[in-house]
Structure formats: C-alpha cells, structure tokens
Image (cartoon, protein in one colour):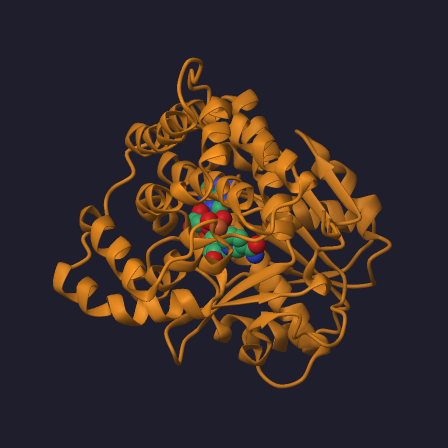
Length: 385
Ligand SMILES: NC(=O)c1ccc[n+]([C@@H]2O[C@H](COP(=O)([O-])OP(=O)(O)OC[C@H]3O[C@@H](n4cnc5c(N)ncnc54)[C@H](O)[C@@H]3O)[C@@H](O)[C@H]2O)c1
Ligand SMILES: [Fe+2]
C-alpha cells in the first residue's frame, strides 16, 4: 500500500448550536477579524449573530459582504483592501462555499505576492495564510474543511482551482441550524454537490482507506436524508445528517481529489454561470455511466450504500444499479438537464471544445478510474445536454 497523509482542520465544531462555542475558540486566532459573507447572510441576520458572538468576547471585526455570486478575482482584491486597510489579522468566512472560498483566497493574497491566478494548481502557495475560520451555511461544498479555494479568473472565463495544505481552515463550524433557511432548489444543488464529492472521492484513483470510510458514510447519509431536507427544510434531523455528510464528503475529496464530474462542471460554471451544485448534478449521470467500467466493484458498493438491493446480482448488474439510483435521485430532486437550464444548444455545443480542454487541463478527470480522451469528454458534454 502506498503512504498517504490526511489533512483536516485542527478543530471542527459540529451539530446544532455549536456556533455558540465559536467565541471562545476565535480568541486564539488573532486580534481583529474580517468577516467575509454575502448580502443574503446579512439579511438573514447571520452576520449580526456572528458579530454579537464576537463582541461578547470583545473581539473587534470588519466586514466584506459583497460575495454576491460565485467568487471572482475582483472580489478577492476588494476584500483584501478592506483586510489590509482596517488592520485585520485573521478571517472568518460565513456562508456557502462562495464566501468561504473568498475568505481563503483573501488569506492567500494577504501573505503572498502577485495575483491570485499565480497560485492556480496544487502546492503553489508559498507562505502560510493568516488563520481562517469557516462557518458553513449550506450542506454542500465542504469548503470549511478542504485545502481548496475556487476563484473565477474573469479575464479568461475560467474557474481556477487552488490547492494547498495552508488553505485548510484553522477552525470549521458545521452547525446545521444555519442551513434551515436554505430554499429547496439550493438544498438540492448543494446536497448533490456533497453527494458528488462523496462518490468522486470514493472512485478516485487517489482514494485511501481513510477517505473511503468518509465517502461511504457520506453517500449513505445523503441517500437517506437529502429528499427529506429538500421536501421539508424544517426537518432538523435531515438537516443535521446532511451537514455531517457534507463535512465527511469534504474531508474525503480534500484528501482523495474529485474526478471527471468536477473537472467538467467548472467550465460550465465559468462560461454559463450555472451554480456549482447544478453544473455537477447535470453531468453526474453521464459521467458515472462512463466511469463505471473502470471500477465496477466500487460502483456495486455505492449501489449497496445507497440502499439498493444487490443480493443475487452480479458485480456488473449491481454497478449499473448505482447509476440508475443516481439518475433517480436527480429526478426526485427535480434537477433539470442542461437544456432545461435554458442554455442555448448552439452556444453550448460551440463551447464544448474549450470546455473539454479546460476540463482536462484542471487535472481532475485524470483521477477517474477510467481515462477519458478529449473526444470522450466532448461526447459526455453532448450526451448531457
Ligand atoms: N473550496 C472547496 O473545497 C469547494 C468545493 C466545492 C465547491 N466550491 C465552490 O463553492 C461555491 C458554491 O458554494 P455553494 O454551493 O455553497 O453556494 P453559494 O455560497 O454560492 O450560495 C448559493 C446561494 O445560497 C445562498 N445561501 C447560502 N446559505 C444560505 C442559507 N443558510 N439560507 C439561505 N440562503 C443561503 C447564498 O446567499 C447564495 O445566494 C462555488 O464557487 C464552488 O466552486 C468550493
Ligand atoms: Fe463541488
């Protein structure tokens, strides 16, 4: 067996009400925090709640609340200006993956020179970041526990993946009470994102015994609870299980990588401004059909973990059941097709060569158990439309 290392935040606060423990913990992170969030979090009162917790501990803070959409290089520089000009020395990302990724990227630029695009890829960040605390408000990206940040390079219409052990947050909060207000469509999109992390990390060529346990646990929880969380946002048990699952899936993919789905979905997000979870969901069934032949045993295990009855089936039959179960999950959550998102067919097909090149350049598809050629990636985009 080859050796491997596991990166996780040193502290993760879990379960309903765990945000109340934050004040004590952040006291050790620095003297003044920049809270990075979005308008929706501010309107929902979450930013005010966080400020209240900080001021109880006499911790001063500043805010950057303009992460309205998935993060861009411009948002990172705007936030960085506030961070520097107001004398902050650590960051708190509060929100879905977008504010958390923005906070991480501001942290990269606070202690490293040049532009954020210089750090695209793995292991390019030279200096450690200031401490970053990450409070998740969607059960989705797992960004609060990962070593990645994803930022849109607005000049090249491309989403950049930046990965470094320095990017793992110093403190993560997975309090499901924050997710009770997530509307059904975002519950579905973010939940399928977490499910995709779990499945991709499990089938990844870089998986290891630790990440496989995390991946399967997340697949099991999401299969049981995502429909309930989507149908009834007030279901605290379902929300709690989804929050736990998204954290497990985040730890799994942070240490085992994602594969072909994420590699192919980032270009759709960058060019057509489709929300991250949805761009994964529309590709997931076709990508899984493609990847299945590279790891039938793993797909059979996914079927079983999703609750499918695979007794008396051959490995191949069971593996195909996993793909059927994934298609059913998308249907149940009313996930549209790419055409159903209103994306023009001609424009989409014209973009396929660029998207396929960008997908391969990201390196993620190479982690899949079946190697995809440029032509095969183009075909998957066409099939998924
Ligand atoms: N760093 C990583 O490891 C990683 C992993 C996967 C995805 N991502 C990135 O994360 C971003 C997507 O994050 P996301 O899917 O969490 O979406 P998001 O952060 O963009 O949020 C989506 C919408 O949901 C709203 N929202 C968030 N929490 C809410 C709540 N509790 N109640 C009501 N509304 C709420 C937001 O205001 C926003 O309008 C993408 O840029 C993606 O590339 C990062
Ligand atoms: Fe994702």
